[in-house]
Amino acid sequence: MADLAKPRKIRGGHRGYLTKILAQATGMLENFNEELRIEASKLREGIVDAVTNIQRLDDEIVELIASDKDSTEEDIMKEIEDAGKLRADARKIVKKLDEKLCENNVTSVVESSAGSTSNESVTTASKVRAKLPKLEVKRFKENVCKWQEFWDSFESSVHLNDGLSDVDKFNYVRGLLEEPAKSCIAGFSLTAANYKSAVDILKERYGKKSAVQRAHMQQLIKAERVKDEKDLVSLRRLCDRVETHYRGLEALCIEKNTYSSIVAPHILDCLPESVRLIITREKDFHEWDVKNLLEPLKREIELREERREPERKGSREFVERSSWKRRPSSAQALQWYRF
Image (cartoon, rainbow, N blue to C red):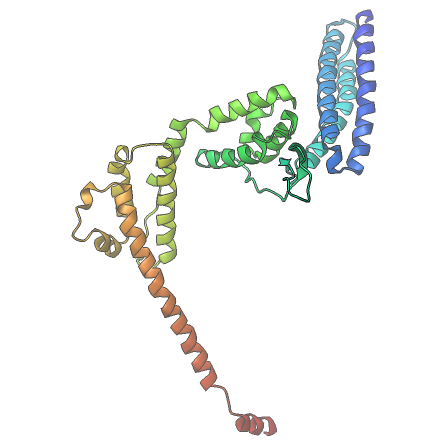
């Protein structure tokens, strides 16, 4: 057991340091504000590094205990339990720090410079960190069709923001990911060096052109049939779905001729027969691509929606007039009251 003395002594030093910074983090969480953001990120990084070192030493110590012929299973269990308590406390603090750091606070860099006028002196342009109105970046889960939208929004507000450190950016991207996408980068510790690697993995997993193309195609092929021509809600939903994924393929520079021979006939089959006859009348629709199909379909749906609105308005007015006619006169009401 003599071999245990050195690693336990080293671990004791790491545990003492971890206990100290956990206390600092706890105090910071109680009085957290925007000015503490950078310090909080550094503390979080220090906690993660300390836990990593302690974990390595814990494993080494357990191995030494297990290899000792005089040790028992209870000795190993006790060592594992003792080692796990402090790490569990550290994980709780890290989670709370993550929540604070990702709490809808978007920091942006703005260049401020005062223009020169007759009454104003010229000031040099300088970069300052400023709290701007909240920027809404939608969370990302796993839908590859929505990856580019998520990345463009994140890139604009966070990734290209020179006022944020890579640790801050890493914090933001982790806070905006949901499972299963979050698991892709779960193994990375929160360090500046790991931010680029995490982004590269996400892009490789969800940003591949071929994968996005397949996803858009699948969504078009999965479009469900609308049975009732009067069901304008379902017709509009179908039209919007086709246009969304058609635009997605167009953004990828995919030639519509490469998939229209499959998709266009399927979408036509999804339409009620009366609608299909109207939009294809006197047209060579067998040669249509998706764009050729969308244009008359959108026009037909818009016309039906416009016709539906006056009908609804007239129906409401009729009900109101009928209701008014059924109201008793003041004299009748008085007689009923007396009766």
